[in-house]
Amino acid sequence: MTAPVPVARRASGGRVILGIDPGLTRCGIGVIESLPGRRVRLVDVGVATTPAGDPLEARLVSVADRIDEWLDAHQPDAVAVERVFAQANVRTITGTAQVAGLAMVAAARRGIPVATHTPSEVKAAITGSGRAEKPQVQEMVARLLALAERPRPADAADALALAICHAWRGGATTPASSPDRGAPTAAQRAWAQAEAAARRPARRLDVVRAGRLR
Image (tube, rainbow, N blue to C red; front, side, top):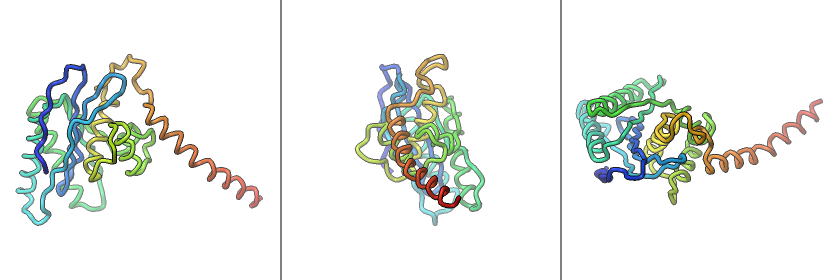
């Protein structure tokens, strides 16, 4: 993993948010700047990795060190971590929860506010649908941050999505009384229109089929 690139403190009134997609093998870390008008700008992104064959304690130390480096380099105004849910794979969920805890402790020690967001909340904030697939989220992240291609690997895109989600859901962009709060972005509107157009033929076909059944 490349070292984080320190960012100069903002003079534009924006806030820096660091998102963490926790994982023991791959931990995504994404940093954005949240600007007025529900605009977001990419600051830095990366993935901390650890070898699966290393002792658990050594892997946790390695991930913790990387998180510390990124927090110290970027001095974010807030940290957003994915909220961990139970899965059938106990080993995976345990490692994910451990890394999430490391991230929250590291931020708390620096006095940085921490928030957690569920995958559905992130999907809804980014695409307008809590049931969106990962490629849809990655595409929207690229559009919102004006990137030439989707962030890779997926862990990096997920970390950026968490940061953007917190910018909009956590009140990091505009006060609650602002008329811009909650309004969809142009990219979100375009995505919703494209999805609606893609679904129309399927609905018409369902109607025809239902008519034949009758």
